[in-house]
Image 1 (spheres, one colour):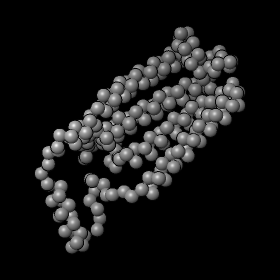
Image 2 (image 1 turned 30 degrees about the vertical axis):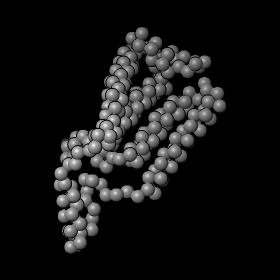
Image 3 (image 1 turned 120 degrees about the vertical axis):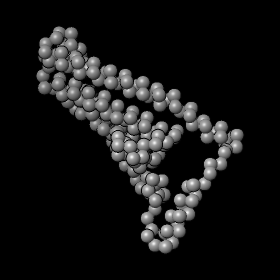
Length: 215
């Protein structure tokens, strides 16, 4: 590190150690309004719990149907049968694939919820103090609003891909316009994610607060 860099680092350190200046009432009220988002994130945690319950329900029915339980078999076959399509008589490879894709879909939506809950809270409400925590997710180490948007867009593309794959498996039972519409929507998600990523690369980024700038 050069001598000017040393002075810059010392000045940066001194600035970080400045005593906290209390905000005036109106700015403090506006700043504290960010906590209004807390019930929203708590609600998403409840939704996460519901997804966990749904996942285990579907997995239970899949296991029981495999062992010949009539009620579970009916539940599984009804869940994967497309309206107007032929209902399978027993769990075959296609039925199993569709059920597993449904489980993967639940997991990916759950991952999306985690990104929104943890990343959104860290970005828009309050720091969680996860620096140097052994369980800190890798993606959270450099999270900000732009990075969060890109990651959410990527997660949505993954979810859309699962739905599109399920449609292709049952393509014979869907009209062409439905398949074309789903492909079009998937492409919109894809190009939107590319546009978000491209705009993020074009925007200037300052040094991370956890990593001092190199000189």
